[in-house]
Image (cartoon, rainbow, N blue to C red):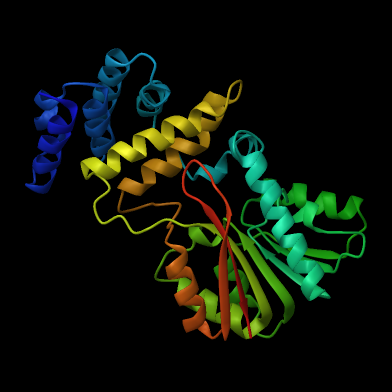
Length: 316
């Protein structure tokens, strides 16, 4: 049976309520084995997930995603991907992220130069890779919100060394917003961070931003809604994208793949405990307008192996 027909049969089984373990007879190649491995992982069947990942690696020894998935499914469940600062920092400082973050910092710097804020809020700054290069010698006061204590320490120390007035909060944006009903900023920004806010909480956060800043700059990936991520066409494209992504790393491939890329991308297939809740730029702009921003514009910022990144500006 050809690969496309095999994946189609597996998908029909998924839609009909079959279990992954009952569909292993449909494996005809690495892609269909990975199809079953990812489905098994999504429903918590780690035994079948690992067995199918092993089969995929045997069928295609050149597949780096299969090799990493064998190791990933062999161990215990992982925690929050941001619990591994080393993997995250290696991820954003390698591969296509080098050019992506250069473009992101340039977009932020351009926004600062146009709007000249006196008080700046950065939500989810991480270790400052996007924020710090965007700040010039005449930097405003910077407030930073970041839930990872380890990543926040890097940003705080760098701001101190540069003598930039700042204050940091080690918390989520949800907790920060609840604790600061009155504070105001000239400009707020967030780069690849608000996707972590669950969809049901996102409108309230965007409304809070609309009430507390004149301008908001958002950088996110344009990720169209995927009603059925196990559908063969989308899954085949997913495999190609992830293979390209992990191959962008050499010495740090296992650290980045196991500690960040796989936990994030496999979350696309689960319904609980997701770390990222991406959406389209069209949805981001619509939600910002609904939150109270009068003018919202967006433009493509940078092509990336996962999806293209866009910068969105919202103004009153």
